Image 1: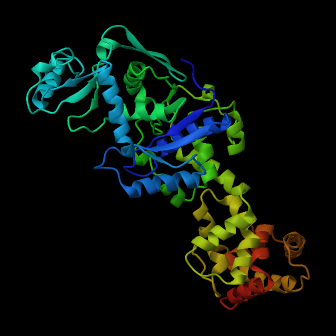
Image 2: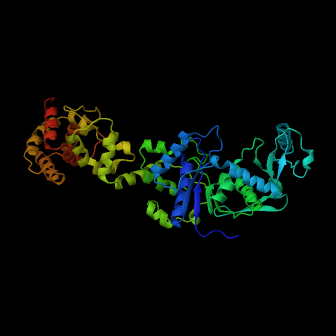
Image 3: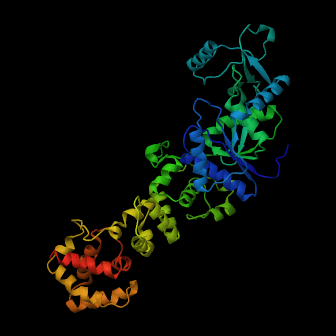
Length: 469
């Protein structure tokens, strides 16, 4: 059978938690591949585990995807809601002789597993009900339904990342399709849903590679097209170990709260297992144009928070000033006056050049909002304590008062000529002035500070320091 021409991919999270970094990357790869080919990207919520699936987790996943800009086609599909269809397929397999009823008790299954371990083998079902006469079925016992899998030969996963991966069929036992209580298993549901949703390509973590072999056996038993598969190595921590929270295995909402821009996180995740030459900064438009499975890496990617912050800094710097001002106003946690908002607007080009995360913007503007007389941090105030510092400020104040043009480029000639006249280095003027105006050592350049504060506020803050001489 041939694959249909239109590309259809899917993201199929289990709603047992938030949208974690690995899941976000999986969604991104599937979304980009579908968009690149003008295809369809579907969202399937694998909510068959009713004890762990929650509506809150579903909402968190949808919110995380929406924040990242990963939009899906149509409505999300509930796997649990399709249970009747899954059971219908099992009836078909039974009727065609490709599945059978298994009456093995829990104790028997436990004994099988223990015996296999004792023999140094992987735990597996021994097929004891595979060919038995139905008349031997015990009375009053509800059976599980198992796939009658091939026992000889090999099952090959033709993978776009891993290459051909071969599994000996003797090592793949007859997997359960329906539990004895009639509930479909994950393996059954995934195959049926992928077929009914016309999925052409499955891009997922390589922890599903073993599942792929079993799922291929089920596709073959049903004479269904097998989707093209690409199993991507999982993300590791910076130390090469399995990703954990200490490495940054967090939900999308955590990164949002930390101050990452969605476009920066998308760019970072894209490069975490996929490459396009030496390109590091890649827009969504470029990614959509370039994304092919051939760019997926076979080696495991390592999560590097410092690199993630560096990319975020790039996107903050490229962000429209007005958008960043709006973010500051919305997240600063206090009402701002029009004057304060204007100061932030004036200083934003300088603020964003220094920020790695969005909260850095807020941390940098405290001096803009401070009421006079401002508090001077001990370290930042040291230039003011030096001999002659306040005398210089007193002499500089009339020069600033006399300035008719109060803008960035006008300050340099005034301050430099003043320093030359007083026969001191430029820093002897700029450092105490910066301390008097900001009270902090973590502030932008002096010309940006002068411009943002405005003439009246600058002269007032200098006057406050002169009274303390």
